[in-house]
Picture (tube, each protein chain N blue to C red):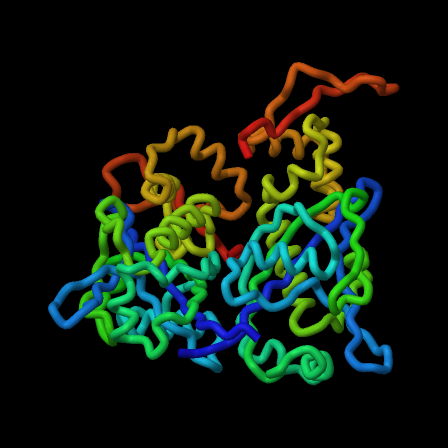
Length: 227
Length: 227
């Protein structure tokens, strides 16, 4: 047998209509001199715990966030992923066998920032939303790589199950376009966007229109029960 | 720490222009009375091996297949996934600690059957291409679930990196449509298919046409260097 340790790391991306995408990072002390390191919220899976339950437990224990739709996106198994010098100090403080291999399963979520106010606990001394462009290149372990893979997954997939909870139950095409622009980090052409979105047979036009807007009210759309 | 074992299971789907999709299964004896069980090719990852290398080594060791583009698609971590009664007999023959938890990473590949002739070795006594509709409901462990997830992944994604190696370097739209029909297991409308495929900015029309065909020659397309 090849015993090793399994962990889960969570890429929690926060969305705020007027801002850029942010990622939820925890801050952890790596020694008793108050030196710290940023990391994705992550920890070891328990012996009898399935992966999704583990992800939820770990996220809650470190950041207090719960009731979040978490989706598995990739498993990172480089045998040396926890062997870098920068990580030894923390590992020695928190792990009985700091040299043992740890494979980690990446889970991703996309949330409205204003609905999820994180509070740090356990070995996290802080939990913060950080703009993607301002994330340290020195996250713990291979967390920069995991974060990048998570963002790539999100952009490649435009996973409707992940993004539908960022919108109200009925939304305009402009709201949807704005969301895509933030996720993809690029300006989209309105006509092309509408042409493309109509092909994805997943949103449905309702007979209702916006109310109380100073311009011509737009039709409202819904994801319906398709997802 | 939470020691467990990590394995890799491979969903190798075979494609043959005139046929249905098939999956590569191994046959393994579960006792010394010649009773056997079918399973996906899979085994434990070695202590210092990364996941993709492990997948390639395992696939080769059990089926002799090599030089295949393997893609990770999902990790299966149910703590009881190897605890079913049907699997105990094999586990006791082949594992020192048959009760230890095993988490498995699923890898998928799509190959032209005629290019990959499997030969069984190691604990596999046979390696066969089996039509999806004829796969036993009693595969080892949770391999029916892993196979289903793999097929779902393939259909959801229509991953061009996976499917491009099923086609010649230049192909007609009819060949591409036929391939999609086999993968999706449904007949597609020619006009809609062409409309939809032209939107995926990934294939490119060449200036060349088919040669030596009894009908009006069709233009040839290519994936170019986009993937």
